[in-house]
Image 1: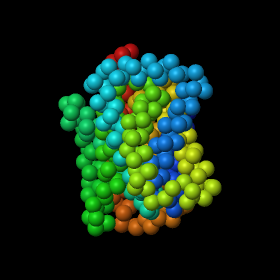
Image 2: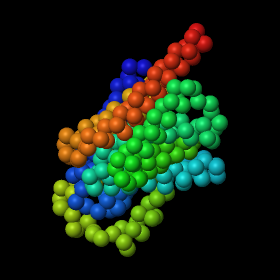
Image 3: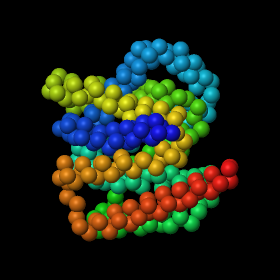
Length: 295
């Protein structure tokens, strides 16, 4: 259990600090950064399977996937959803919207619960009902005060939450799933890089080339840590530390990127933070009830 929580902490802290990495690439067109991230991630995962002797595992799971049309369709949808999530996040960091990105990841767990209610007909306890109401109120307050629809803060949880929902019944291991997700969109990436990209690799500085080259590694590490965490600790326990990610993102946005944080925005964020607190309290109570039931 302790090992699982440590691994989960490592994954969420890594994800939180990734905004600094993408900020270093802020001078490059966001679509090009995203494209090279896909290329680098696919190469990174390919090397992972070769170097760690897991090509047999990759071949076996790919063969099973090809013959399972339902799971194959799910993976294709998941690939495009995670791509949307990645490109919007990269765009947000590059265009001074890291605060909005952190807000999106604060909302994400509550959106996942909402999906379960709508599609799986799961019932909400009173704590969750209150938390969803408060979160929606917080988003509404931020939209009214900001004078614009918080599109980034909503696209991120919409894409990532739906991605997680679709992947819930996918049986592929995390490494193979990540390889497939990048492989599916690779044809579109190659077309973009060959015909629509504003720059080629010769236009980038050495520093930018190195960062683009290792973008696959920094993408893969948090995911692999998270996958290992789930093997050592239950998902509901690992989920309690997920708020490290947006909290770190928000701190970086304000104190390192110096993004403006208007005092009136505190009301919207307070509503969302209280929503998270209520949600966590509800989950703790539920866990205690389950332990008593199984005792």
